[in-house]
Length: 209
Image (cartoon, helix red, strand yellow):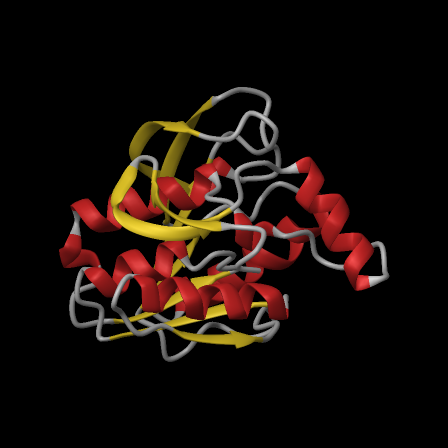
């Protein structure tokens, strides 16, 4: 992991540094080859994605959202969003991922930023995220099947009283009618990952059906 990334200041959220890859395609191929299997999770942990960048920026600019509260960073990837919450005084941050590589990356990145984030390799989507008071998801509506699992989870978290925020750069499967837009950003991204070098990204708050 250290060999394939370098610790660098994160574009759009310069308050943070992460272990990030400089290119996408080669790392994707190398990761699959080294694991010996195709179909395991791609190295989402090696990049700062537009949705996560948007949520992290919002959290950094609105510390009252997370200060003193228990926070869940869902599908955490590099841990970007959870680290932003920890930097702004969250009462505790839990970062959930289904990729053990990502869990390792989150630990490295949290340490690099001098914060504590509890990372775990777990699929939480059959629950409601308790006891988190704030649930943050960087970019989870890019596939129909994923959206079909994530939305009920987020709605259950909202129903029990959690604040639920999602960052989305125009993915097809976000049900916008159930959310309220809080902020919109022009976010720089790696062109290899997206269809452009800048993605218009919205931070949404779940408000219900």
